[in-house]
Structure formats: C-alpha cells, structure tokens
Image 1 (cartoon, helix red, strand yellow):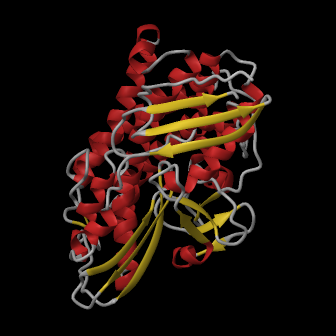
Image 2 (cartoon, rainbow, N blue to C red):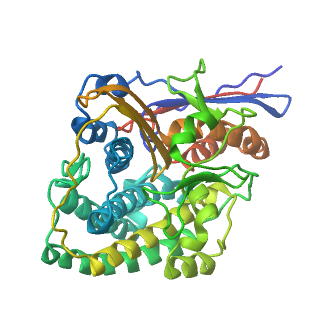
Length: 430
C-alpha cells in the first residue's frame, strides 16, 4: 500500500485560519474535512448583559469585510422585538449601505482571492505583473464600495453611524451627488469585470444543491424577505430555529448547520441568491448574466465568481437608484423604547444568509443572543463538494490536485474570521 501526504502550510486567500484533509483509498475519496481551528470568539457572550443600543457597534467587530451585514441583522432583530418599522428614506439608505458592502466584498474576492486560481498565480500581487490593468480596475471598483461605507457608516471598517431605529446621521442630497458619478464608472467597471471572469476556464462540475436565501416580493434581497429554498421552504426569520440547527463536530471549532428535518446540508450565498431571485436583478444585470452564459440558473460552484460579478453590477445599479430617488428624511431614526421580548432577523451578507436572535429584559439589557454566520451554514455543503468533485481530479499531479482542492474551498469565499492566515491541506492517498 502506498501512502502519500500533501501539506500546504500557507494559503493567503481565505479569510481566517483553517485546514483541509482529504483521504483517498483505492482511488476514491473516502472523506473530506474542512477544519476551522481558530479559537472561539465569544461575541454572543460579550453581548449578554449589555444594553441593546450597543449591539450595532459590538457586532460590527465580528468582521472587517462584512460589518454592515452584522449591524443590519442586529438592528433588524431588535426592531422586530421593539415593534419598530423603518421605512422611507432611512430604509433606502440601509439598502445603499448594503450596496457598498457587497461591492467592496465581492470585488475583493473576485480580484484578489479567486481570480488568481483561474489564471495560475499565487495571489493578486503576482497576478498584477501580467494583468495590471485588471487589478487596478478591481482596486478602484472596491474603493467605490468603501466610499459608500465611509459616507453612510462614518468609516470604511466597522461603521459607527448605524443605530437601532435608523442612523445617527443621514447624508444631505448634495453629499450623495459625487458618489453617483463614481457609481456610474463603477457600474461600467462591474460589467467589464463580468465579461473578464467569463473568459476563465471553469471545471464542469455541478451538484443538485438545496439553495437557501431570502426572497422579497419586489427587491433582490439585502436585508428583508422570507427565508426560502428551491425545495419549498418558505418561512419567516422567527421560524429559523424550528427548521435549522447547529451541531459541534470534532474537527472544527465552528458549528455546522443542517436542516432539523432530515439533517441535510444546504447552500447559502451568491449562488443560492441568484438561483432563487434572478427575476429581481436589474435589467442590466440580467442582460449581462445572459450575455456571459449564466442564464437564470447556475449549479456550477466554480462559476460563482461570475455570479458575484453579476451581483456587483446589481449593487451598482441599486445604489444609483437609491441616490437618484433619495429625499432627506425629517429625522434619521425612529426613537425606540425597551421592552422585554425576543426578536429575530435574517439578512444577506455577501457570503450568504446571516441569522440573529436576541432576548432582552424590560430595561433593554440583552439576556441572550444567537448569531449564525453564513460560513458555518455552508461548511457541511463545502465538504460535500470536496467529496463529490475531488474524485474527478485524482489524475492530476499532487500540486495541481492541491490547487483544485483549495479552489473548491475558495468558491465559497469562506469568512473563517476577520483576518487572512493559512490553510493546511493533508492529502492521504492510502
């Protein structure tokens, strides 16, 4: 019996610390484990005993890439609890803030984390030597997303302007005009991005995924809608715990999510949103999706980079729509008073469905909090991708096989934590 182990000690294109082990016996993939070994971060415990109004600033620190998603899920859950309905210009500003986060996060993944996989480079810096114009375009496009966060959130990283009931301050119309000009350029750059990534060479692999995402009657989902699937699920956020559960596994410090009924895995994120909400994309985003060969459905996870590019077009379109129709609100927030209860919310972080639940007492102090990020919801599905796909790549040399395994993980843009550290791969061929 031959035994072979392939180890990768450094991978700089996933967010956080993780490892991957694939076991092959008799030419077949026997097991695949995606391990997260970062220490627990205890944010749910940090929230207990704090006043509910502190929630947006605390949960924003969970992630430096998608802090808005944590803020929006938190404030929506607390507004659900407190009976507050945020509408009109303030609600529109929240969608604009979400557009900024999607643009900066998607473009970071497309250009710096995922494109090097398809073009044969170790990273974005090496890729820039031969594709300087493309990398420059990506960095400038990402900057437009950051400018939205700066204007609406008060700063690009961990915004401070979000509060339960709205914002501390709403921008003046004149402050948004320069942003509109930048977004018109960004929309053209996003279209170029979609056409560029469509030229990549994609492995022909598909799975019959269970897609789970938000679905709204009239909007491509950011921070509102019911939780739906392509298998008939249609529930409110308050019903999340009745349908989904989390379990500890030995090889990961992050919990794995699964359906309570049947115990199966599911996929959240761009691919799920796209397949469940294609009809709600802007006309331009739909046209470009068809032009680059995506169509209304896509089950190839390697093409998720194309879906992210299409969603970036949509985010630019939606941001322009909000700015063009914006009217300054009389007041940037609705006053809220504490009352005892439980509140629920789910929003669409760039990487997928993000669920929050809070219980507070009559004085507004948080008694319990539950936060389920998209990466933990996708972990089981990611491991199933490896089991299903890697067997078809076993004829590749070890280095290329390792690269393909890493690429399969990066399809998910896993946000293991707020920082990029390393992935260790052990390949046991028996």
